[in-house]
Length: 384
Ligand SMILES: *Cc1c(COP(=O)(O)O)cnc(C)c1O
Image (cartoon, rainbow, N blue to C red; front, side):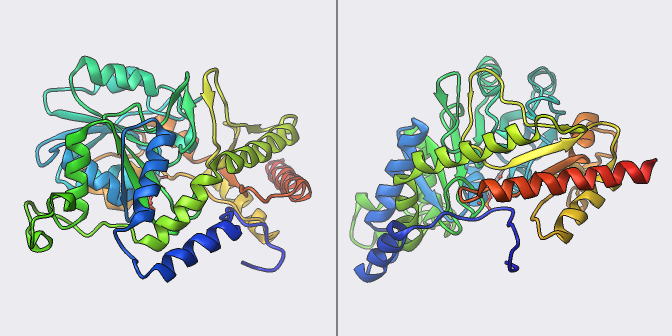
């Protein structure tokens, strides 16, 4: 981090995190231990699910969720083009095909009507993402999935601590996956968690993350080198789990601080012309993953990018969350083009993620907003 820079994100680490990580380090048990168990219980509880399976990343968790559901070559999974690339990559890892549908301009989540229209005899699952942590439509996707008897997979990597109409995110799908990269609501450095109420899925995921071993509690002598299925090493070590336990104990306070920062931005930016603020619709309890505004429709990608560069030149961290997945070079083989999903494309060209973390001060928020306003005014002068 540069001196004086206001960073885009920043983990919130206190003495508690230091103490528990040190405890794990000194315990002599650095993998598959009590911190993993406690971390799993805490995250499953926060999501209102019976099982938690800690894994080495959110991406690894999504990969295992699809494997546990038996999704593979020839299958189609409906998902959003407006997300971090991992939510579509996991579909390709198992040899299945991501089928994208366009989003709603308000929630930035998949349009439920288009999800339903995309279902055919090859559709094996719906993979939904709470974009920027917005839980809108999760109940609608769950209903559609139920009607067509296919599973809903919830990529709730951006939505820990969020709920919709009283139901907690992570519990809408047959299986949900959280991520704990350092910019998320809580972090373990790298890490993720699969949550589910389904005993068979939880057991399959526990085995798959651990080289295909049978559950260790089954404990026959020599079971460490007995592999029932093709598995992976997607385990999360005890140091990371200890960090996760400390963060989970502080989750309500962390969310409260994120809310305060989001409210401060909302109040400060309400009157600023030419920007659209995030919408929080009725029933959405946000835990605030990021704070993303967008320019109004008169602005294009070049103007947005110049504003991003201007902010960075003023030592203000910012990002273009998210370029559309279907337009990524890595997705060219799927045959989508510019124009395939007009709303997702139009939104993604105009987004600006602003610095957002628990320690952001009023003065810093004010400086960010002033600079943003200035950069927008400069664009307007340029356009005449
Ligand atoms: C963060 C995130 C993931 C998982 O990321 P990892 O870095 O693998 O933990 C997956 N999907 C979405 C939508 C995310 O935001």
